[in-house]
Length: 98
Length: 426
Image (cartoon, one colour):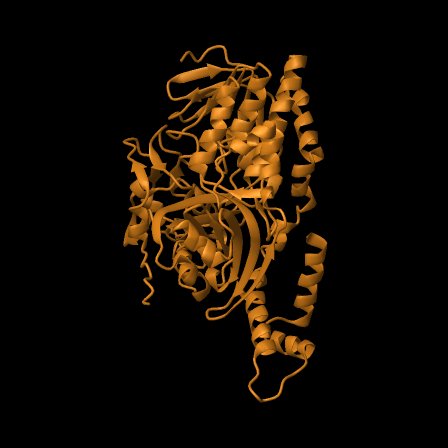
């Protein structure tokens, strides 16, 4: 019997989660500060890779799972560039099997 | 719904909030329970298990109506290297002590119990701020609405903006929080039972330490739902950030380990979840009360990971009950001042279930020792390999073999220190 091993990727994972887009920006990053950031901890802590780096910091809040960990690592290890709050009521991620 | 006339606002309809709202409403208090998700539980994630005693304490016999996936019969831990593993398993004589569940079902059900008792639930509502007058919390602000109340119970989770706004907390340190992630992998019920050696309907809880966390402070977990496995990783926020290992890559490391691969074979992943876990314990707040406000659940650090049991929901429920009882007493006195509410702290310390947080208060620091994740699991596996392997080259006695295994991995002094500290901590 050939065992079927499911190949996973982050894109595949994120496609399994329901999001409702918040028109109001709930994460705002002062990306100028990120240029000077040595460790860039947001790139590694985020389980959804909301943050990415190509010469500068870019971020896409649509996959945000609202853990709030980016705020902590940015302010304690990084460049204090991230402002973060929860999305508006009823918006953002919605887990069915958490 | 009119937002006037509420005596108490409970922010967050997770286990702490719903337990508090239920306890207050049952005594005739006008309670507003505010949830930012579209339904209670929609923002919540956990590993997978709830200890039953807390629910029994809250609801009496009606706890049996809870949405249970499986009662946990088997507890296990696996130490792993990249290509070997050493597992220990315990089969309990009584599985009713804890059960696996799904938060979207459980939290929703618990909030319904609070509603049935008379609490008013509003969903889709983010609480942005507190009304503070004369140094005392006098209500909440949610969007356009200012809602005056006699008291607020903040059960707004790990990020607890309300405790910070009330001056009870500063931002947590990265080493005080962990990132939790999980895949929910769908499998037929009988396949789950066959693979984990379970009777129909019974469940298992398992912890993985070693290779799966790639040397970082963390570990894996597995819980059995009815028709799915909840498989996840928890990793220290400081470790994943400063060592530049993307947190979610550990999920694949766990899934691809031979021990785990077999368990999820032919399964279909149906959801990915993540949540931040506070690991600092109750000291994450300067105190869990101030004039007009109490803090309970994750927001107050009321949870306990002592390395072999992971408790959040039960402690949240018990702290929610304690918060509600504190409010009931203050209500009798018609006094919600800081001084009046300080009885909460004593309740927390005297409550047998919560006392565990203080008993095991040194555990978080002990668990920050990275040897637990990148030295000892390998040591255990290598020792087992040496003990069980017969290759005709002569065998050493077990004690000598164990000593030989530690060479170059950990100094005798460190080993003894870790063992002694462990004995004092647990």
